[in-house]
Length: 262
Length: 348
Image (cartoon, rainbow over the protein chains, first blue to last red):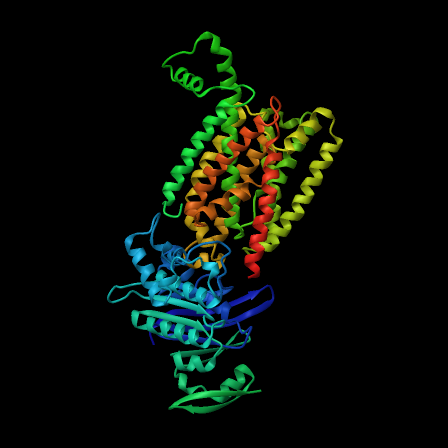
């Protein structure tokens, strides 16, 4: 496996409370790495550490072969983007201006024509091009999430061949969306793999994770439990150990689908 | 206004400010017609000296009117800029320097100097006239630092805690200032009361130049932080993910903000609501993008302050009204209106 990001003996604790026990983990390059686990398992903490935002109490985080905490913040921002669960803005600012923020690590004073073109393309990709002049806080929650996704896409956009290595983190990107927009966002994200992006995403929906993910990483109580390389091979036993629910596997046109019981 | 570029709006505001400066230079208890000001300028440039009978006028103009207009403009620019800056730092459109303890801390520091300057604080006398602004900065800085410390844990600033701490620190500082004006003997007490209302009558060259000399470099630094403040709109984590260092940014800008607000407060007293209204108007006019908002707020802050000072000099001639009374009179209802609009939007 080709690793884009590697966590070596990474741990995190606040005072005497251990949030994350020592983890050794590699995220596969140009694959969809899905992190799963119950609430409070340490998924968000793991993401923030892997993305270089939170300095772990111990261990190293390598992006490629370099320690992420030794990288220049702007240089890092050109190859690593992060979509938060929900971004609230209290100011009257247009959709276009929000997406342009993704280009901030790329220009000094004023955006160039290339930056504008990428903003347009990113808005096009998430289907929000027609709303570009609308004021961000007036959008619905789902629309705001798509605009934020466009910002993240603009940040690590590349039309080069072969494309440079980039990583996109998404923290529960579909948690507050309706079914249609859930699938739409996952399709867009899945399409980024072909453009040379590595995806690291947390999801709550195990069936969607099995359908869209390449590798499933299971966390519980701040501990790495299992990495499943074949999303079709999630055992009902694993589901019970991680989520405390019984599961039966159904057949969904040749693909396994899980149904849960307490 | 929708079709004008940011730059065009900035230029229009600058032109309006020039007009306001000219008006402010000419009206007051002494009236200087524009053609007389023009003669003074030619005299100043050594082109054509004024007639001897105009010597007194020239003296009043140069020693009283000019520094006052300068101080007024710089103070207005300071308050407008500071309002926009703090709203960006706290990610909330209803913050201003008065809310985070900066102004009241500076006021307490300056009041201490007024009352104890010749007794307990006599060691500050080598500072001369700079002693009041230095004490105001210390007061404003300590108050802001206290608010900031309480609101910041593990390198993360909590906005709600910051605002609540600001309320408590304001109450404490105002109690201190109130106590000082209560125990002060007449001349000092009058000084505190009058100065608490905000006024430009005491302007002289030393004070005006000091405020200007501190303001200009801070302005240059702050205007270059438009992108950073935009990024901060997304929240501290997301600002970090697009390549900024939010903790360092917030701290640096808070220090500069405290500096310019404290020094201006030491000279002119507490002037409320300008920092709130000016950025809000600019947001409505065009955009909340800080690359537009910061220069626009500085320019229109100066413009508004000059206009208010002209009114203050004219309404009860030959006496003058403290400008703080006028800004509060206009500002408080507008503040309530902004608050109502904000609540409605949150509710919907």
